[in-house]
Length: 171
Figure (tube, rainbow, N blue to C red):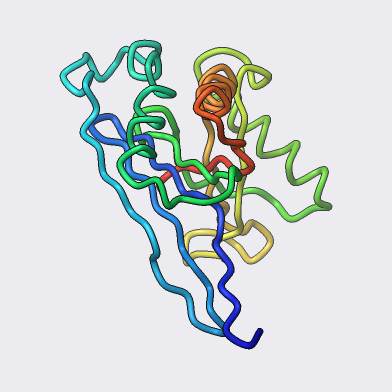
């Protein structure tokens, strides 16, 4: 079985105007796109500020896109939030342990977000120091979203018959 093919997760980009679904396939050391579908969303003329309306029929849109190519395999999905539903920012946070670092980011983020920090989910990655900050204060990129939006998207993906294992946003 030297050329055994292995399919990856189903990638779902639930954009404001279209749903994009793709799956890669690994054969040996090479990876190639094996499936891809782009479906214009029926509600693409909706008010972009209305988050609930944008996600109201997401499971229908995902199922419809999957039905356009029945060769998608597996049920594990990696999903990308629409840019309108996420917030990306750069912060300068002093060095510290992992838990302390995350707490400092949460405190800084809370001062910029609408609502409490508990109403949001976030992740971060270090971006390295810049000329404007000291080496003790690395630049950090933080991607956040309202928890209700993240949970709703996960539920819509589940309703479409998939399991959202990873949720990300577009930087």
